[in-house]
Length: 217
Ligand SMILES: C[S@@+](CC[C@H](N)C(=O)[O-])C[C@H]1O[C@@H](n2cnc3c(N)ncnc32)[C@H](O)[C@@H]1O
Image 1 (cartoon, rainbow, N blue to C red):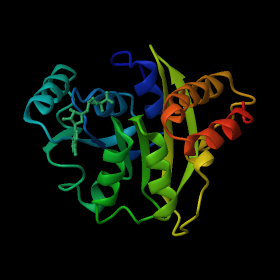
Image 2 (image 1 turned 135 degrees about the vertical axis):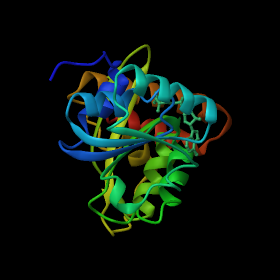
Image 3 (image 1 turned 135 degrees about the horizontal axis):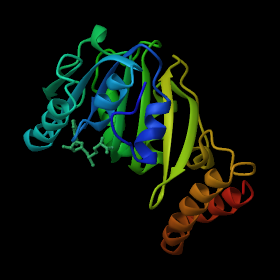
């Protein structure tokens, strides 16, 4: 099906993790680009565009109306997934927020521990805190990738596994990336290492993590 409009590569990568014929909830939707694009492309059968802010949701409504998608994309003014029922979403996208906020949103939904739900997560910062949360709470990353827009972003697909798995500090930065074979994954890890090196100046506990992560490059 023809593209209704072009998504940037960050949102495109999120979209590529959505299952065909799924019901989607986009949390923190702002302009509702992803839910409209996914429904117009025929990838999602319907979508909820949710945001905590009245103003961003108003942007979303404009996009939905502009692309005649009101029959497929509905909006909801809510904090996280608080107004999303279990049968309303198979694939939940939470993009463009800090890793700790994303973790809070997953944690706050009473239906998150259903292993049929797919969480497509794009942390802007603190992806290590998100990965730590996921593994210590019984979730796992099914796949993870990176893309380059003006900077490098990572997107992960996670689901509940029921197994709480202890992970190393290094794993919380590396996740399921393959920096030795994938140049964009490598660039993402190099960026994480630079950030950690700045922290390491004031805090010795980061030094070993930096050294170990460099061996993964
Ligand atoms: C930077 S925008 C990201 C928009 C879009 N998801 C993207 O990735 O391009 C972040 C949006 O998340 C919304 N937001 C922040 N915290 C939220 C929460 N707890 N629940 C729902 N929406 C939230 C903000 O109002 C804002 O519209």
